[in-house]
Image 1 (cartoon, helix red, strand yellow):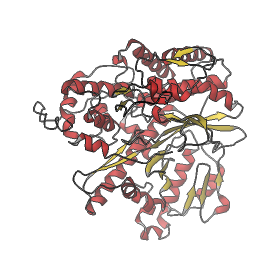
Image 2 (cartoon, rainbow over the protein chains, first blue to last red):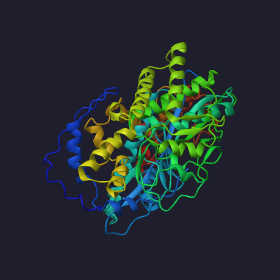
Image 3 (tube, rainbow over the protein chains, first blue to last red):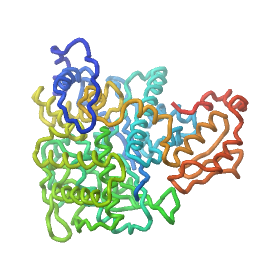
Image 4 (cartoon, rainbow over the protein chains, first blue to last red):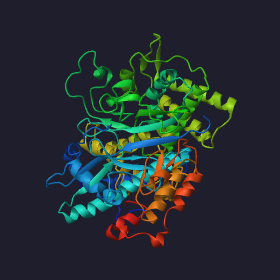
Length: 63
Length: 489
């Protein structure tokens, strides 16, 4: 199940759009277009085997 | 207290991933990460030139404790500067590890739980006046701390429960299936008020180490919070908690909302995104998280009207606090989904899940949850959201970058940072902690600063005059190139 999304990036644009200035606090603008492009691109950033990746993160407890 | 000293300590999760290769333990990776620190300060527990403390904690967690701050802007900037330092340690360790044949990726997570149920913290420190009775303070504060996750939670993809919950256990009110919850930390809190940290994980830790004049001050150590990625979430978290403390210190009656079972209540709140789950009070009444938070916000707003604003971010704090409660009440997070961590995370994960037809039990969503807390710019989900404008901020990169090398100007951290930088530039061995500055060769001239608001002292000037000018510094740095640097990374 964890493998099914890797490679699902056919719609992704080749160029990563330049970052836009972040909104100031209080302005709750919805940057829908930016979220869409990130939804397209995020799979290329994540390692492919999600389940193994998550299970591989084991730490001891802290204070 | 009109001006308050704040600090926050962050434990980072360490993850090394190299599919198909021998895994490295967090201990091994942490040793690589801290090698430049040890070379710089001959210890894995050092104060750095912005006055903050960088160290390797129990469980091989890289930890960063901010210098003393007295404004929310300072606090958030110095905290974010810690992420910059950690990234520099990652970059150096990645190079050294590659040279040793370990070519995987290091991830540092500013979160509060690993995949095996271990938890680590984000510990807030607030300086209190010793006159305020601690028991009264903690009784009044704990119901606030339990319910503030509505606007401070970092959000968590919760795995489905394994097996049936025993009747009467803390699991009984938690949904059995995978779901999204407000808090990372809530499920790991085991006690209300205690002197322990690792063993029982209380909400407030009673260890009384003020690092200041103990006759006048006490340090409140709140260890129930989630680690926040969002600057605006941090602003409202620290700002609202400070307002609660101001009201308690001023003797403002906040009502008796002591919870019958704080540890059950904190879980009920985390797993109920509607904010309406009824919590049992010791008085026999029942209140929801939303009702309690509405009450505190009303009280705080009235308090500020009576006493005036004590800092210039107060309007922003009250505004975001109120909008977050509105969002939960209306079950529409659109008004806060660039500003409050859980809502920023939930928005992206929900959109991703819809696009790919996933449920909350998908490992990919658990991975995205981790990725949100990955501090590496351009890879971590929060950093990507922020750079696209999908996460708001009130500071900028320059401010955070300055805070890496510059201590807060309004507290004694200014003296510490200046001393460390001067001693290193002169190549002189020194020792510092929260209250002391000492040149190893001049122990009688050590400077002790019990007042955390003090920013200069004649004794410090005397001590600095003992330093040789950097040009004529002795040859120590010749054998240890890092010694002259003002920064370990």
